[in-house]
Length: 291
Ligand SMILES: Nc1ncnc2c1ncn2[C@@H]1O[C@H](COP(=O)(O)OP(=O)(O)OP(=O)(O)O)[C@@H](O)[C@H]1O
Ligand SMILES: [Mg+2]
Figure 1 (tube, helix red, strand yellow):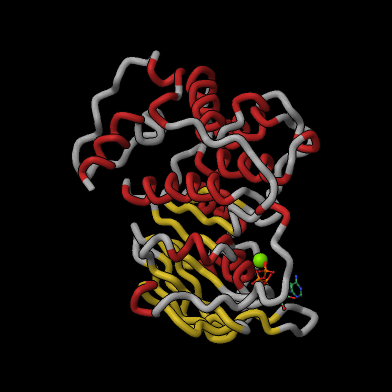
Figure 2: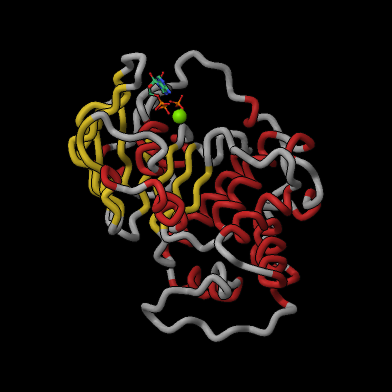
């Protein structure tokens, strides 16, 4: 699904952010990208989003060869993705609800469908009480959760997340990661940059380590014998470690969902439609029991 071939990125000021990166990510994979600050992680994601273009080498995502992507095709290209940016990028003139709803309107969703889904997503990330708040009335962790809800709005095939739990306390980080893992089990490809190595260690997923713009390790965590803690040396615990945020409501207790008639589960191998949305609570229970 994602193919980086000898990709080098030098910024105009001469900084070499990535050097001859070659990487293949299959559809349906879950990949953590870790590495010290400045290692090139965000640059890697920006190339994936076609926000930056490589200095040399090629990036292919699905059917799109990004070097030859036409400007008018960029929005269509990005529609398949749900993105959580490191700096959130919420629309400051819109409230929480509208920030998520807007992402759905852009792709042509209308009316009740938007309302049901936005309500559900905001409950999923524990923000049902902040629906009418403006972004500047939210804490960092709350803004980050709005960004996560927005990224999930359109059932993306690919979730790209740049430190999506950077401002969120450990328990909620784990809950959100569990949500990503479930979406991944449903077929969504997930590429997640994170500094939360303790969290990464709890999941046996593929881990790509970037160091100074090159890939120094790539593979299962067990195969790598754990991740070296490269970037916390001597630093104080980040603020999010001491902040308390109410936990995400358990999935099966999301009320608006229970009032809806239960749809027929999609047949094996069929893509869930946007209307069917995220896995339903009872499906998640089944999936958990099946483990
Ligand atoms: N727009 C830019 N112009 C010039 N240099 C840049 C630009 N963006 C990033 N860089 C540089 O490229 C290198 C990689 O940056 P990048 O943002 O990819 O790091 P990162 O791994 O995401 O770090 P962090 O963990 O701090 O987010 C750094 O040296 C950074 O200073
Ligand atoms: Mg970054």
